[in-house]
Amino acid sequence: MTPARLPELDEIVAAAHVVAIPTRTRFRGISVREAVVFDAPEGASEFSPFVEYDDAEAAPWLAAALDFGWREQPAARRERIAVNATVPAVPADEVAAILARFPGCTTAKVKVAERGQRLDDDLARVRAVREALGPEGLVRVDANGGWSAAEAIDALAQLAACDLDYAEQPCASVDELVAVRRGIGERGIDVRIAADESVRKAEDPLAVARAGAADLLIVKAQPLGGVRRALSIVERAGLPVVVSSALDTSAGIAMGLHLAAALPDDLLAGACGLGTVALLDGDVTASPLVPERGSIAVRRPALDPSLLERYRAAPDRAAWWRERLARTSALLRSPR
Ligand SMILES: O=C(O)CCC(=O)c1ccccc1C(=O)O
Ligand SMILES: [Mg+2]
Image 1 (cartoon, helix red, strand yellow):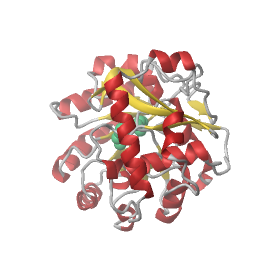
Image 2 (cartoon, rainbow, N blue to C red):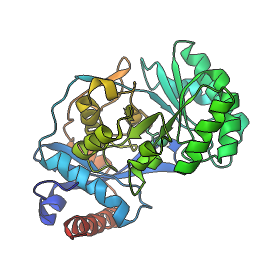
Image 3 (cartoon, helix red, strand yellow):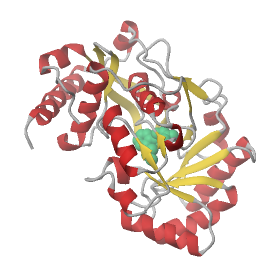
């Protein structure tokens, strides 16, 4: 997980810019996305574990940022990556406006099982997405572990009428995912199951594959410790994958694009969840990595000094992030 040569903390801090970028629509409870972006030797990089994560959970995110900023990356096998539209848990009548931010995307991933909402809200939202994409489009749902196994089976039985590509993390635990796969199989419901949190937040990211709990995996470069380490997990898991973002700025999206570009053809399971800069109300580069004609070019964006200034985090938040950098960096260096 650790880069061959870890830059010293003062070098890391000297390269760091702490930003706070508003989201255009509340997503995952977030209305301002805070991130550290680095002006690093290999290009822009990003460290943006969610604020509620403890240092142990944030450590692989820093390993990823240092790897991407300070080390050469594995060779790219493709120049563009097809991406899905990402639809937050909005009312159905807002779906069209969200999809319009993802020009050319014929695959959409829809958030479901949001706390405080009902299955009818999900059904209406997913139907609106299916209607907008037409029968040729691919529709995915992501429950972020919000359903019990019984709820997931019931929900998927109803959502299956919208013809789903897959359901991402319908339940929280690997055992529940196994139960859902079995339950929908017995009822003849034809929906694949994808694991996300069961990969990126698990003690052992390969456990879900070993348990036969998923048809495919969602992989995110930052929580998995960077492009190299994520590639090695994917190769060992032996399941097809979709690369996705963590609501990163374009600096972090570039890391995801490089991971997707390095994957062998037979392991890439369609459009990736890397179009999420379209959900932000700003960025750190003048040439954002947003979808064009359904895909994004694999490149590293240049940080724009005036945008870093515009979105510069308040002094107390910047200090908080610098302290987090110091603690996390110490963790990466401590023998375990
Ligand atoms: O996969 C996508 O389409 C976008 C990324 C996404 O959904 C996401 C973004 C931030 C945090 C969690 C998730 C998630 O996949 O659960
Ligand atoms: Mg997910």
